[in-house]
Length: 610
Image (cartoon, rainbow, N blue to C red; front, side, top):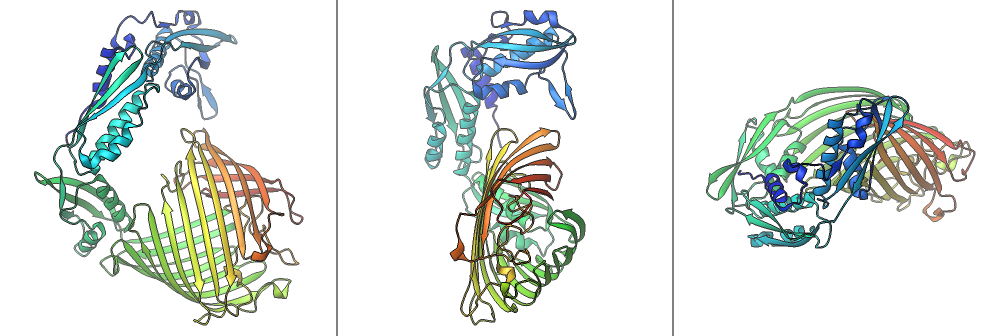
């Protein structure tokens, strides 16, 4: 695809129009920059750098790009050596930044102040001068199919607001993307910046959409013969489909979800003057794998897991796997098989046989189950899962209260429907986006079910970027369940529990909510959890979290009341790892405990709680 150099074109325009300082063009900088007062401090180390007179949105950006800025390296501070050339170069960088953000006539004066015998603190005092603002924005040559997104992009340049070069680039990129999404893969945009007077600029975008393209064939290379039909069904590319970059993006994600290829390269190649073929260059991944792990965290001090699977043992994307896990409170073993694209494309159907032991202070539950589920991945950010499971459970009631649980669990048939949506930018350490989950379970009375019930859970997390890698994370989790038919209570595995490293951190595991007379958790029919957490970097791989967690579990839905709703505050130390952050969380319960509990809790785990 042809490419242009919009940044170079805009830079030349700005230089000619006088929007950039003359120093950028090589002229004498003496009128705009004065660092002569720093000459007497040459040879000292810079222990601090301050820039005064800047708008708030430019202050942090300005400091990060200067060579004289002291920076922390692990456990010590790196202090740069002051010399006239470096000071002058930093002042020029600062003026260039200001010119690109509406202040082409800024004046910068440098000064120093002793900090002991060997160090100096440097100050750049900025006098901004007249501000340049946006005037009129004109779009030329936009195709009809891209008019709406193009007009939306243009509104970013609001007349009367401060000129920002980054906004000019952003609009240009949005226009190119709008035309490509409208079927013009060779589109380009030229930018002209005109200065009608000394205080404003007009921007004209001239769009060259090029030919309108459609897709032809999908050409698959490097895939085994038995998987090639699956690739075609998964991508679902139909000849005559209008070109859009989203098609390649989504196709790559669909193929990645198959978990069958270690390399996925998609390229559009011309078929004729208006048709593109998509070439999928694939490399099969290792199909037989064996994974073993040993871990620990505060909720389960010992976790040992072994899993083996062959992703294509039955060919055409049909696999077989088995696994087992031992943990303090949960042990399981299972065997499962799956079929990619059974019945409908972009779906995966699993058949799972599982034996599980839940080992708690108040009960032990042994369950054998068979489950058939299908995951549908039709949408860009969302998926739907449906499932049917049949299980038989044997309950050992260890509670000090005989009526804390029903006599036995027995047969249970459960129908499940769940919806997921994930727009977060990173599965392990998100900075932006949101995650939503809505799930319903129904065990119909009289249908291979001795204790019928219904349950609904709605939970979500939202991530707000606060600049750099700082993020505000929020969480809300609402869950209810109730017995149906002749059932008088929920079985222990269908109740809700709270407290622990990924729940409400002001309590230990399952310690929030109803307990029996021996102070052992017995769970409840309703649960509400809410929280927020600020995550920020400190140094290298070390980060800091400040959080507020709230929540409660109610034995019966009729008991729901906020009189004893619990809240905790805390801090966490984060260590970045390839599998997610290692966390050390310290929480303090600020509300009055429902019963004698330590107000302080310590939690250790890998991964964020939400």
